[in-house]
Every structure is written in structure tokens, then in C-alpha cells.
Picture 1 (cartoon, rainbow, N blue to C red):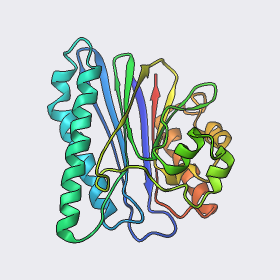
Picture 2: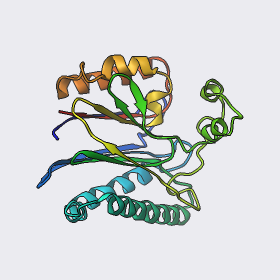
Picture 3: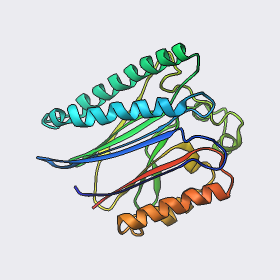
Picture 4: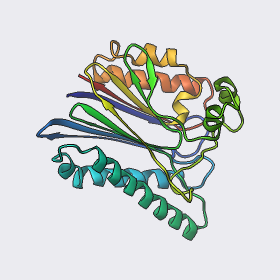
Length: 255
């Protein structure tokens, strides 16, 4: 499988620092191209969120360079991929929490990562950053680990109520600020002419799925320049509509 990629991150209109961090890495292997995409959203209400998000990104970069070359030689690598990612998440949770205690600050970050390997994708999710797949429509692959999502699942809140709830940004867990980390793991089959979108919550609060599809569907994204330009367009649309958070989006198209 071959890939087209683009990534865009923006400080937004209110915050003094960009607490989001993003990573795209690609390598050649005996089974074809391998691509890793990671987005971490440092918690806006916590101090030094950019430190926490960048620390997680560095661990995934080291994993890609040092562990993945061995893992891809395994016939069925899913369990090894997910177990090694869980170790990264748990280790980062301990290290960031300890660092925050020494500095006297609270620190945390969400994590969303997607590995594209062979004919499969593998995803880890902690928090409320998201992964979508765009084909004939916009399909969300991840479920938010948030208070409002739990309320929706329990039938105590509708999706419409969740969108305007003052508690919509309350996370059930995040790396560095939770005593227990329980990642969600997702895997599936890759096909050509799909678009995978990873984003922090600042990217998707104010724009609709229809607007995302109009600018990011597989037919529109013919090359990496169009991918980048349309990612910037939607980011600026978010800012025009007064989104207050940092905004980050990464795009992967299978070709």
C-alpha cells in the first residue's frame, strides 16, 4: 500500500501556546510501506500540556525506529503492536505524573495513534482525539473516553445534548493525570482510495461531518498539496467560527 499524507497544526485564536503535538513517519519494509501517525492533545486546563504531548510523541518515534522493524517480521503482529503501545502509554503516564509532581503542576495529554501496515490498520485511543475513515461518507473509528460519551452510552444524554454540554470536554482518563490507563485498541482492513483523518478535539467541535467530507473525501484529495490546503482551509474555518482550542489534523490517503 502507498500513502499520501499531510499534517497541519495551529495554535488557534486564544491560547498562548500550542499544546498539541503531531507525528507522521513512513518507512519501507519487506511487506511494503509502513506509516505511523500520532496526535497528542496536551490538556488545555492543565499546565505544561505541550511538554506532556511532546514526551509521548518522542516515545512513539523511538518505538517506530527501534521496535517496529522486529515486530513487522512477526506473522500476526497485532498483539505485539498493541502490547508495546500499552507499555508506552503506561510508562508515559507514570513519567509525566512524576514529573508534574516534582514541578508542582498538573500535566496530561490525550493520545491517538494509527499504524498502517500491510493491508491492516492499528489504532490506540486514550481521551477524546479521534480517528475517522472517509470513503463514501465520514465514519468515526474511535469512541471518546469522556463523561458525555459515557452518558450517551448509558442513555442519560442524547448526542445533541452532549454537543452543548458544559461537561463535553471532561475526560475519563488521559496520560499523566489518571491513576489507571485503559487504552482502546482498534484494528481493521485497509483498502485503496480511503482517507484516514486523525484530529484533536479542537478540529472537529464546530465544523460538521458534511463540511469535513466536502473538503477531505478521497475524490477531492488528489495529491498532498490539496490535502494540506484543505486541512488549512478547515482549520481557518474553525478559527473563523471562534474555536478556542489548539487545532491539529493529520491526513493519510491510501493509493
